[in-house]
Structures are given as structure tokens and as C-alpha cells.
Length: 305
Image 1 (cartoon, rainbow, N blue to C red):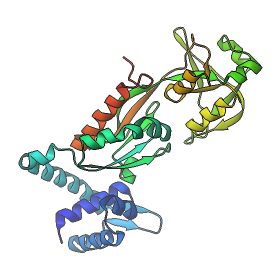
Image 2: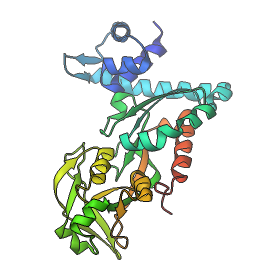
Image 3: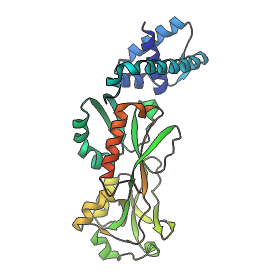
Image 4: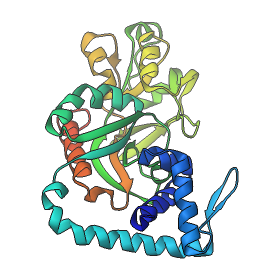
């Protein structure tokens, strides 16, 4: 039995909290991981993991062994680093990334060829979703998150600022009038955009002088899809408050018209989040730098000064 490999396998299973998910991230059959842990437990003479059909947990011996494994694997990496400096500094290997659906499709994917040409040895596995994935458990290296960060277990690195615009189709404004102030919104109908994570509609929040003012908008139509939200707005079904990068081309063509220019919506930070220690890898550093440059080139997404 390769004890170092067994330690690495054990640590990955604990981090993923699942044999199946660990097997996926290691590109190994689940049976191979089961056999490795059985051999390791037989060698040590103690049970490391409690397994049932639905749960996986560490025994007291398993928790102690896990801490020792983490220290040993870190020491091995530190000892080897000076002798594989050329490999250590070259971005390479698999990088699992979760992108928000709309940002991924409209901002990142159209430019991804640039990253692949610059870093051909990095294998990207991309998930386009607005769900709040458990990065450690699912073996994901990093994710794009919009808004204030909630998970204190993750490291956040702000790479941009998402700006928003309040707008409507000309047909809606012709039928209902153009709001001239925030108070006018009480007489208007909105299309609501709700969070797929919480089920709650996103706030309509405006910068009103030196203050932020939230307005409770009435609406008979709601969706959790950012691009579908704009599609509904284009049909004149109500006012929308959407990310500027999604509205820009429709504003330029006249299919949407901006309203309330003097009281813009509040912006939202966009961050790259990742588990502790992941940013040390060259592939992560390269991807983070590329994303920051990508967002900096987009006026609707570049980080606020």
C-alpha cells in the first residue's frame, strides 16, 4: 500500500464528505477509494470513517489522523517545492470553476479562448449555475459570486463591480408613462427577479443623494433567470432593474429605455471565492489574474475605484 497516496485519498474523501464526489474529483472509480480506505484502516488497526447509506463522518481516531495527514501532506509539498520549481510555477492541471449562469454565458465564455491559448496546460471544468455550491465538499476550486459574501469559510477576492440600470420597453412607457422620481414608482408595475437560492425577490435599491433607498415594487410576473428577466422586459410587461452588461445592447438599439437616471440602482461586488490555500496554485493565480483583466475591460463590470 502506498501510504502517501492513501493519506491523499483519505483527505479528499473527508473534504468532499462523499466517496462518490471524491472519486469524481480524483478521476478514480469509487470502488478503488473504498478499497484504499479499507486497507488503510486494516493497516492502522482502527476505524477512520463511520459509513451509513446516507452519512459519512469521522471517528475520533479518524479526526486525529486527518489532522496528522494534513500536516504531513503540507510538509511533503514544502519539501518537494524547491526541486520541482519549473513545474511548480507553470500553470497546469485541472481547475474546477463554478460560474454564475448569466455572467458565465455573456462575459466569461465568449472570451475563454484567450485563456486557453495563454495557458494550454490548464484543464478547465466549468459549471454554469446560480446555485450556492459547497466548494470544499464538491471539489470545486473557485466560484464567481455576486453580492455580499455569506460563507465565512471561504476566501473572497473582489474582481469587479456589477452595475444595474432601471429601464423598460418603449411600449410599456407609452402605456404607463415614464417615472420621473422614486415616488412615481408606486404607480408602476415591475417584473420581479427573485433569487434561485432563497426564493426572495431582489431588492429595488437606489442611490438617492447620500443615502440608499429601497422601494417595494408591485408585480404580477417574476422569474429567477437573469436573461429571461430581460426578455420579459423587452415585451413591455413592466419595469425591470437589471445588470447593465445584459441591458447595454438593448439600450443602444432603443429596445429598452433607461429611466430614473439621477437615482441609479446600488451596485454589487463580484468576487472570486475559493477554499483556504487554493490561491497558492499557479493555475488558480493565472485564472484569477485573467478574470480580473476581463472584468476590468468591461465598463459595466470593472471594479469601482
